[in-house]
Length: 301
Image (cartoon, rainbow, N blue to C red; front, top):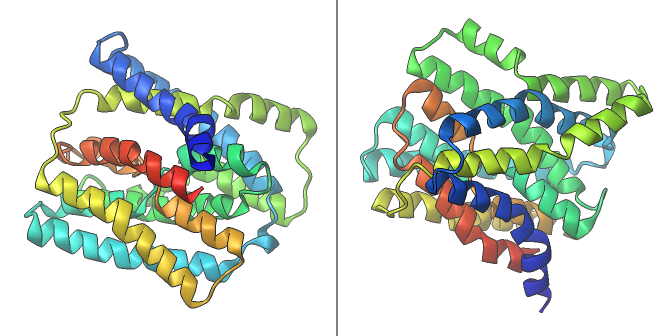
């Protein structure tokens, strides 16, 4: 009963915005162009507003750095294995294999797992998810932006670094980190404005993503099934095993595994679109992992 309650009261309400966007996109009630505009507004304004107070007020000293290091190590291992499988077993081109492997380790933490964990555990109770959000948004995100830019040949390393430095989400993280470490209080009107705008980040982004993904076929191919399996089974299993070698506090263990079991983030799809890389496998992986993770997330939570 507890699992059913978590599924119906905490997970499905968040997932519903992605599903609604997918349905309205398939029925052509909302166009891809309209969804792209919504997504851009969410990325430029609402997501930074969501993450700035989160980072500015979090207790960095409470982060379990050993657990975070174990999670990052699992990302490296899972990415390497997934890239090799996508490249040499499924025969995908280098850049597509690179982004398919990214789908395995880059979870939709900020806009999907974080609001779900907030509903279940409350403010402050989901600190481990906040730690992963900070890591993935500031390190993993930047790594994939730079490497994909350079390998695609669309820009040199300097241009790629500039793209990172002008990224609104990364700017919000940097500003929040500076204010946090300097113990500078965030003015209450700024917090109020950030909370007001940030509340719309997850639903609007998930809705726009659903519309954009609705234009892709869902038929599972060996590549889609394989990468989805690596995401939903291999990566959580690696994280679970790593955290049982040197166990962190129980809540960190449980929430890190919960995050690892989450669906693939949309950034791989966004990078593929940006650089003209085929998306016929990347997009369905995001859709299938978002759908299939519903039961596993309810069970783990």
